[in-house]
Length: 79
Image (cartoon, rainbow, N blue to C red; front, side, top):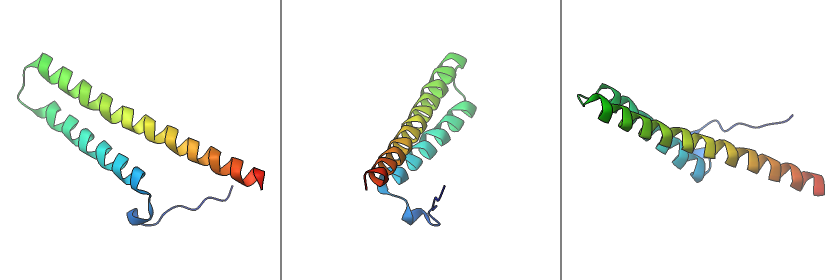
């Protein structure tokens, strides 16, 4: 397996940078909501929703990465 990894965030494509940014944003908001002085039910719902958004973006990123790898493998096999 010959894989090259970007050494700088600028080397990563725009979609990945946006996804990482959204994951960091929603993850940070999740942590802030967890320590916020809110009612227990409101806090639980807010943290769960923000964590769900973070996990959804993460899963979407993984699916996108696997799809790109599969497409690249298919292109190499067709040559």
